[in-house]
Image 1 (cartoon, rainbow, N blue to C red):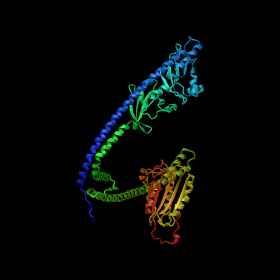
Image 2: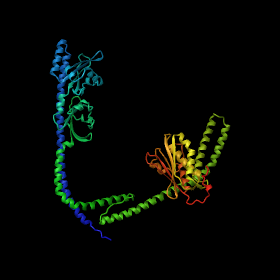
Image 3: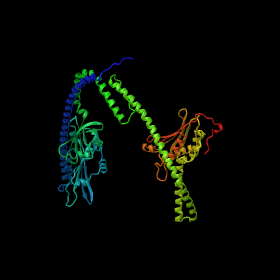
Image 4: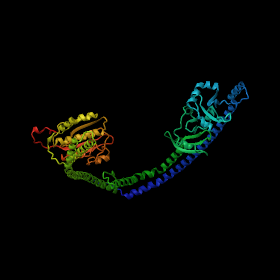
Length: 614
């Protein structure tokens, strides 16, 4: 036998200490990079906040200027002391002096209705390829909240109609012209060029202005304004408007890209200025510094890592694996193995550990199967004895009740309350009698006569009996029977009862929905035959599977089942020295597998091959 090399653990521990020293250097390097990163983060957020605040102040000042210009128009349009021709001349000069104002509308109430007076700058309208009808259609589609504006609100929204002419709509109220009247509303369509200029002051950051709903009024990307884009990526948009003092800096996910942003409310018209920058762009310098530090550290530590890496891994990794495996065994999971091939004490320990878990697993499986079989057998046996006693004691009184009820019903006049009550007594007594009959079958009171029979013939006869009922309920039944199966020793009537019970249960589980049930037979080993009944129903939960063969356990509604069908089936298959089990993955239908022993040597004449008649 070849002698294996042996490496004591204490030598590996010495090697691992070298790795610890090298890790300390790496941690120091990483800490320096992290501090730089944190400092960079604070700087970027502060800078973004400052830009957002300045943008908000500049935008607010600009909007107030537009408000003043619109008030000049209002003073002009409502003046009574100048002629109409003079007023038209002044309006023309107004649009020349305030060339950013594209259109103005004055709205006041007259006769209970809102009267509108609109004036447009014709040349700008022509260059943008628009008509007055386009503006009127936009106003009808996006009406102003007049009641809100008349209550003192300052309203601003994206009013862009054409890619050539980005606009925003500004509206505010004026005192009523007459005492007791409603406040007048002035609204203007204003070119967004000056707002765009504010959002394009820096190339490193994305600057924008949005309204309360998140719709973008101005952005460095004009396309977002033209398409009335909503900044849906912003977190807690409503909360951002509540910060009245200064700006708010935060980090968030913008459509899959980590972003640093800062926001400041304008304090005018429920607007918010925002500044964004991608973290990948913001931390480019930090990443370059971190890469340089890591490169230097790697050059300093590479020698130590090569010396200690393999030794440390052979110590820490195997110990971790063994520790987790031991915890699993302590929790009762014996099907665990460790793959450790080190040539030292740990390798020897892992080999012994695997041998131990293998033996424990084998014993646990065998013990579990034996215990389950014993519990089920004892439970069925005890219940069978109890059922037999109860059935004998109750069956005769029930027969008497049923007889007297039927006799009395014949004497009672039909349609009377007495007649109806006797019908109920007869019906419920028959139902009790049916339950007692099932109990008698479950208790195996009748003697079962066995004879050699063909499993395939039993299946075919069952299909002929049940096919019509399943077809009525839109259940398709299919069969796939293996040829050349050996015979079994059993009772055809009782096996048919088991199969019909499984088929009817499958049909009821599908709740009158279209489905399919398949029955197949096959040879499992030299002396075992399997009958598989599989449906396309909703399946059975693990909790129900654990109790499915228990007497009186049922998931059906009251009055539709006694919970004895599968218990009786279990007893019948057990009397045939076979087994029945259920497999039902969630949502993938249910499969019942019946296992029956085949006759090892047939000595009966050929005329005994026929299946017993039902």
